[in-house]
Image 1: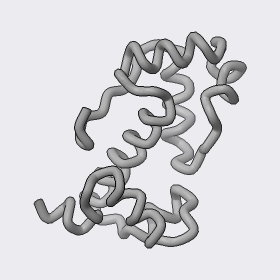
Image 2: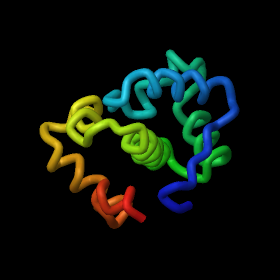
Image 3: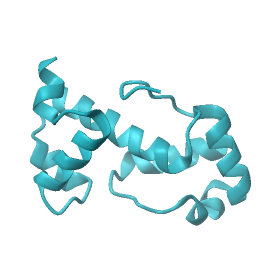
Image 4: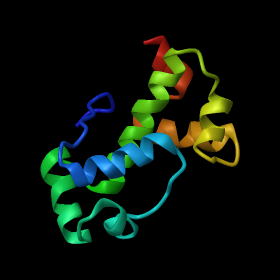
Length: 112
């Protein structure tokens, strides 16, 4: 799955988790911390994430964060704002994560 490929799960339990994450970019809870909120057990949630998205939960969350960042950059939001919302210590740390995942820094990604 490429950097721009991104799929939202359809299962209602997974949708609850995704909706909460969309509201808090910096939520770092592991999937094991979501079962009560999502009304499902960890193993079922793990299986569903893999089945519906082709990714583990942590891979999906990272992909979503990258996708969300790209959308926000295209809307003109500065890297410092996006990094701050994701609770990165500084923009440099965020840029390094972005580069590791996409192979480019945000400015290079938007220029192509």
